Length: 317
Image (cartoon, rainbow, N blue to C red; front, side, top):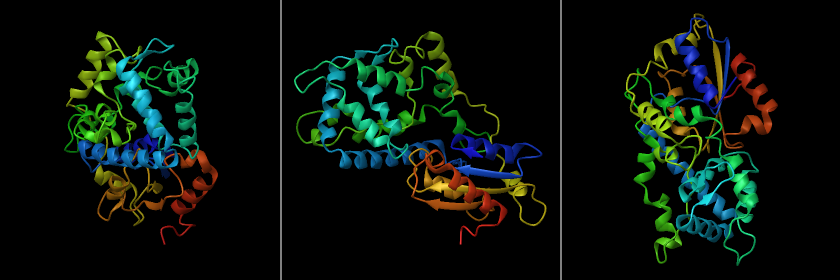
């Protein structure tokens, strides 16, 4: 069973090892192996934008509140209990939670509501700062930061290096420029958009205490520019492993979430088209769940996918 990046790993098993798992179940985890990394991040950016609008539709009062928080941070970044610095750009990374479980919107609204002691008080509460410290995983898991974009780089594809791809995708879209959205006038009427599950080169420049420093900065930029990665996937081997003519050694089924904010739906479905690597993977497309479906109703999803892989459940029809 491979959830999210675990599904990417499952596809590597099907590609590179002689005896991959007999049954491979993927949940929100079909790697966009046929799509260039820059196109992946541009597509995910648009999905993040839609989730932002959906959030603000549910909590319209937070349009003003988020602008107030961002304006304060642009003027005066706040010291975090861990030693890091809460800048406006780091605050916007809280958008990583927008595509999570059904309660993620409510949790985010509760956090924003705790930012100030009162409408007239311009200081951040300690509870607000401590919660942000625990919500952002990069300091505690530096590999998550360092190799975040490298999972899309494959020697067998036309993508040779990551080259801070997310930064390029966001920098060319002015809707994500918080300095514009907090201005007075026409630009300021737009909500301030939070970013998604992405990493940026400035994260090693002091915002995150454990990520910062000369050595970490040099390592991060070196990985981003590295262009001699080994193969991650082998399309022909994947098709052989999942062949339905009696020669295949594995069976596969996947849950693909239509509104997934972290793994692009279109790029995933491309891999499952006839003639492509996962053409023999049974696919269950649904919008009942977000990326966190396995956490929200794991037993039902697992049983359905297992039945699909075994041929006991006729999905797709």
